[in-house]
Image 1 (tube, rainbow, N blue to C red):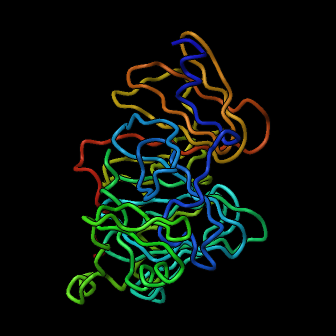
Image 2 (cartoon, rainbow, N blue to C red):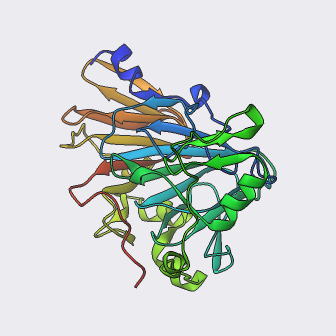
Length: 322
């Protein structure tokens, strides 16, 4: 593979194209400044304006959310697994029917494998623009987002209507629901009753891994982060591990599945038969299956990276809470 061909498989942080109208709360005060990024795969955006950087899916989707301080993403759920790691800033994640069942604060490098079957939201509680990187199970990413009823009602009051076809219509732009499309119905009481209300103590021990712990655990070998035998035991259709300077493979290696490389700290040298490049924090690289590659930090100082690979598990529900 030539360097030019490989570059087509890398989405650079500085080249990310945001969508500010991706979801139903795009006009809702407190949520109207967030940016959504679809990096690999179609993602779950409800807007035709969403730019997709790499349409090929390796069995899962990669996206990101960027938000200024005190901007939040409203309560929602997915049919498939959803995991986040913090690239920049400090974030509060909260969950439950009204967002008050539990919460956790994550700092840079921390990862949260959110259980399915619960409403979840998040906000940037740092002092600068922050970004979290998202992993979504399956090629299809579940066919969209399920919103808490109050989110849909508040969005309608601010001019955005979600059709049952999963498309947003903006009355501020003169748009209206087509005559043959009904509004997205609110969840029934029966459906809402199926949503979990786990406490912080229920969630954090089995679904959150802290960056500094992962650094310590990867002193001589990669730390297994998400997987059946990992720190966060799960089978969401993908597995995640974590590399630091002390745990990089000694020789080149290859995989029988595509691999996504996502640096967190430092700059990483990626080499292959035909070329080499450097990956920086916020870059996302889709390495094809079967291609031998080598990894090493290209500079002194802290260096860490998440690696994501497809598994043969059914795409993508997180294991239910015990």
